[in-house]
Image (cartoon, one colour):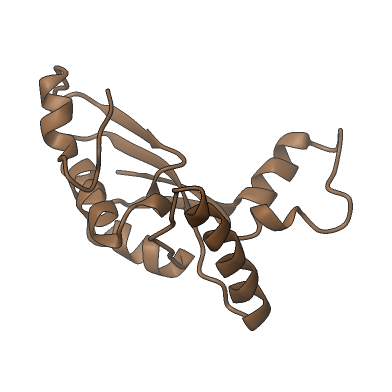
Length: 146
């Protein structure tokens, strides 16, 4: 079921598909958040948080860069994405997104860098040679539940 998070509401689209807000739910929202405006991301997270318990959300996001070099690299990647018609609109810091989720009522928040998660899944069978790929550095993957 396609959803344009900028113009549709997730509530309307899920309701029309028969989703019940009273059932336990897991929302997997990968590859979406950085393409949304912060308002659209916040609105959707608020909707998810208002589900009957238990509810869980898993999503990835781009972390704001904290150095001039990091900002330049992230800006170059953002320009490349925009040039192919997929501009990035949202960036968060782990502390800010965790605070936002806790304000919405999520009590358990796990947030990891994509590079750390991938390295953990490789479990010694293979490793990044040197530093993780540049493309992974700003990517974080988060799980929140209540």
